[in-house]
Picture 1 (tube, rainbow, N blue to C red):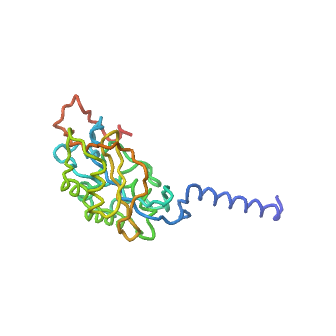
Picture 2 (picture 1 turned 135 degrees about the vertical axis):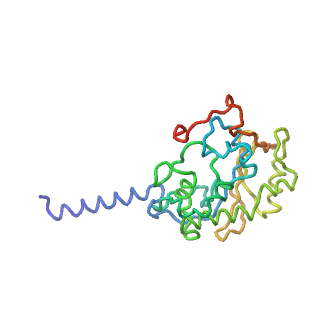
Picture 3 (picture 1 turned 180 degrees about the vertical axis):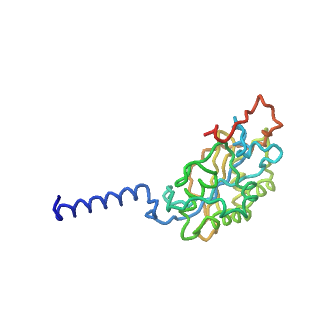
Length: 259
């Protein structure tokens, strides 16, 4: 048997290794530093749904006439001022029962625009909402401390700053033929939001717009100094991909097949 004096250094080494394992990329158990600001990431369905090659029950692009035609929520993300972000901050498995009263609103304004189940931090493959809560929501403390608060807060911020309405009123309507000046879109949001957004494009099409907030949810400028967008961009109009769409164009699969 090893002597007590030999066992003590070994125990200390094991404890230090465990601490290092927990601390890699910020700890699952809370060692990541507190975030600096929030980014509300909004998806443009017209752009994302144009890329759809398979339909399934979880993909809102495939709802036909009930598919989203306005910006939908991707997530509310705690970020750092250095351009990085925390993730999977503490072990809190997503529980859909916690947000049962919000499901109708989430299905409409925060749907998945893809097939297949999303990866999560603690629950294996699961719902899109599970991914957002476990990866980002758990890092929202001390501003947001539980699952229900994360989703209701995000919905309320989304409703308060209606980017679709802002752009429509400025003359930037969905179109499969028009191109709009990127600067005009940014200015329209700045005039209403009083802060500079971040615009993400897929080729020339707007794919996401991000609004940034201080921890008290007052608007602040986003950090991005560069953009993936050209000077003129499009806001593609939705093209139906529901059951009424041509079977030769879009194949329907189960969610499990899409994994």
